[in-house]
Amino acid sequence: MTEATSLTNHQFDYIIIGGGSAGCVLANRLSANPQNRVCLLEAGPEDSLPWIHLPIGYGKTMWDARVNWKFNTAPEPGMNNREIYWPRGKCLGGSSSINGLIFIRGQKEDYDQWRDLGNVGWGWDDVLPYFKKAEGNDRLGEPLHSQQGPLKASSIPKKHPLVEAFKLAANALGVPTTEDFNNLTQEGVGYYQLSTHKGLRCSTAVAYLRPARKRSNLTVLTNSQATRILFTGRKASGVELFRQGKKITLQANKEVLLCAGAIQSPQLLQLSGIGPAKLLQELSIPLVQDLPGVGENLQDHLQYRLIYELNQPISTNDQLRSIFGKVKMGLDWLLFRGGPLSIGINQGGLFTKVMPTSSRPDIQFHLGTLSADMAGGQVHPFSGFTMSVCQLRPESRGYVHIQSADPLIPPRIFANYLDTQYDRDISIAAVNFARSITQTQPLSNLISREVKPNNPQSNEEILAFCRETGATIFHPSGTCKMGTADDSMAVVDADLRVRGVTGLRVIDCSIMPRLVSGNTNWPVVMIAEKAADIINYQSLI
Image (cartoon, rainbow, N blue to C red; front, top):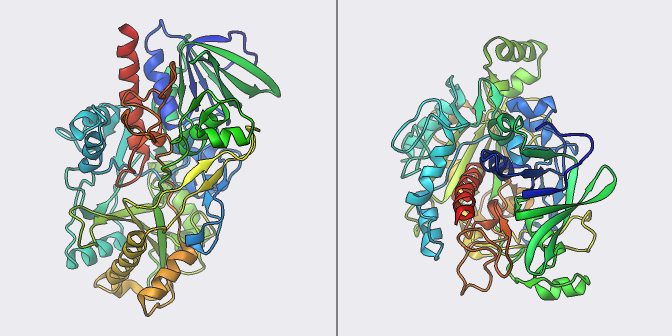
């Protein structure tokens, strides 16, 4: 239903905290049963900002505090004590409203590993049906894909000369061309598919929430920040929130579903008395359940952005720097829903392995047809492109800890980047491989100079470049990890129920025991689709 200016009903069956990638899926699937009274809480506004819906608008929303939490990590020793900027979505659709749009599931082995860690029902064969349930692919079909789901995966319609040269250079180095990064092998080079539809972003707010808003049993409350989960005994029974300058309490007759993401889900659990006992005692927060794993196991993909100047005006920089180019981009989108405005920044992708111990891809590339000093920044005054490379399965682990009992104070985020020797070694190998692609024809024929890094001569200099310039590629995960009863650091079980209490689940990327090999948005949608089925089934028992 359309949000009312005043809240009259304070009782619901399910309260979903976080109207982001997972929350919008759950709001749709649970409210499909007219007997369920569902409330979706979102701390940010509606997804009405025009830049959200224009795919290239990612460069704007990355810095816009109206729709972005704009977190920063604590000083990172492995990154020359820099604080790393972490954008996270703060509007309906969450990070699916401001992300880079890439359609990636991860590798089959990622999910089989989850299963082998004791998480029954989370192997590849178990999760594939939920990926397909979500997917509306414009080109790929059975047996691995679906064209019927609400969340669209669209192909890039026009070949780009830079991506074509990138592909051929990678081929020359032994990386095969692929038409589908979401098949059973993943390795290859090619064009990404994007979460777009008819030239517009297809977020979970668009794909899932928008068609459900007409239902009378669904209440959506924006600008409503949850501050605490309430308990009656050991059962989660409601949520305390700030809304329109007032503190409000809502009652959950069945369950509270926490979908606030890898930073704010552990934050809210800790604020509510669920987490490491010592941390909560230090902040005088009454202990509900001692779960030492809440906020631990933080994992993220760390990217290194290599920048090159081209000797031909074929980059998006060239179009953005001229009035004619901007007009052409606008007309392409207005008339045909095509051109750079409909695609975003990253078109080309590559997955391969660079470590001798790896049996499957261990690094990922995003090839952007523009260049800037930082992601989302002002484009350079020359024709340029960006080649970002990241390690897929980092060993380093960090944490998210609240710093205060005040829910409006951001938690301390410590990613602990490059903490292990393996992570440092693979970073060097990844950058070396990236540079070898640019030194291989035909891509080398298009390049006039290397801008970043600035001609390093040794592995030590490459590692220094990684420490000086590395940044998140926006995939924090793992801080409320799923695990078995004998795992003292597990926060949720295989049904995503928080251990030690009842009526409370966590459903977002924080439940990942190990970070998946690729972009995280589609895996989060899969998690929510599967969770909705679990909840609906268990409600009948």
